[in-house]
Length: 228
Image (cartoon, rainbow, N blue to C red; front, side, top):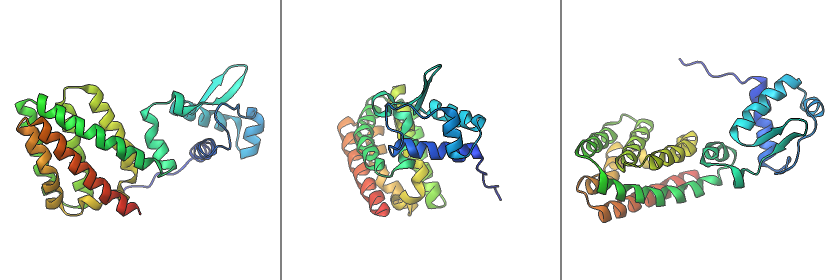
């Protein structure tokens, strides 16, 4: 049995600070209180506080200016898509916006894949589609489905599409237990995705876009129904 991770005091403080930032207790653009006062307020040492600051700075929520202080960054103006997993974990409201981008980008990726995929990539897509139908349980079906979409992105020949696909999946995979609706039946899941793979394999750009739009719209509806 896998051992469950244990939260450290730095983990707890990082989560508390992140929550306080994202809920506006520490507003965008404001400077945090002096380290000693903040550490006393949270009941931690300044060393623990510095470790938490380091993580939140790396995440893009804080910036420290030596001799001035630590300020809350305007993540909506300055941040990147790499913040999405953290923001979705903080507030499920973000998932609807992730799905909107998923649909538009996913349809474009399918169209580009149909135009650019190599014979080897088309064969790989067929094999990955088969793996969706052969998956043993909903969790495995969902992960196999993800691999098909990542392969579609690679087939475009555009690495930015690959990174965008990774980012979008990273954003909602932490919630995937609540988003298993479309993947409860392996054969149904495979059949739902098959028209996309067929159109890409045939080099049908228009057909691939339309099939992807249908697939993404239908699976989004099922997922959101499950969240509701």
